[in-house]
Image 1 (tube, helix red, strand yellow):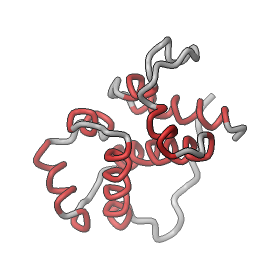
Image 2: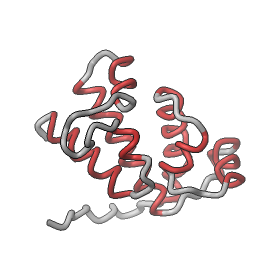
Image 3: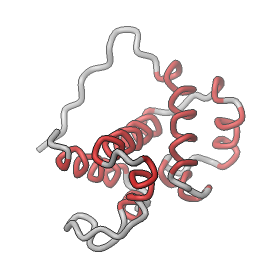
Length: 134
């Protein structure tokens, strides 16, 4: 089944969203204890120099559609975990723990997300949305 995304609202600007997106991602990466390589992989492997520029001056960041989509999935995963697991520390640690659900095959959600494919971010997000009945 193909996933249908709503069309962007009039006036939608990826450039305008980029600073907030990179700041949010940076905050989640810190909470999830993601190292540099993990962060780069989740973002689709941008050049390190570009990544460091985004972090240094997020207001100047101009993220591509793929990077924004990846960050959107990370934000959705984070939000779903905060809803499912109200203890923030437990929620933030969940992605590191081995999971027996068939989509994880005994690996952690983070290991699945670090495959480098945007579809794996989507699968983790979909799994969590289903767990919370959404």
